[in-house]
Image (cartoon, rainbow, N blue to C red):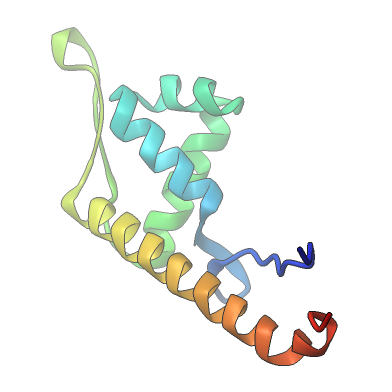
Amino acid sequence: MNKLKPRSKTWIEFDEEVVFGAGRAALFQAIEETGSIRQAANKLGMSYRAAWGKIKATEERLGIRLVEKYAGGLQSGAVLTPQAKELMEIFQQFKKDSEASVDELFIRHFNKFFSS
């Protein structure tokens, strides 16, 4: 069995600045699961400040609100907006399609190395 495999990372940039990728997808997923930016940051081993900075940068670059924060009382926490959930779904499909294309291109270009 041949052990050659392609590897690639997919992310989206605007003016050479990261807008969205696997790291931000993981952060948004953790916010969805925990209902808290702080807990999501802790889960991913990052500071609250770093997590909040990534959220704000993505919101500014896309021009849409992605996370709603609620402070104080029983309702404190954070929730993803419908746009954030849609962004995550679209990115995951784009990533899946990109990986399939890379696999296909890899076979096409490196097939001579698979011959027995």
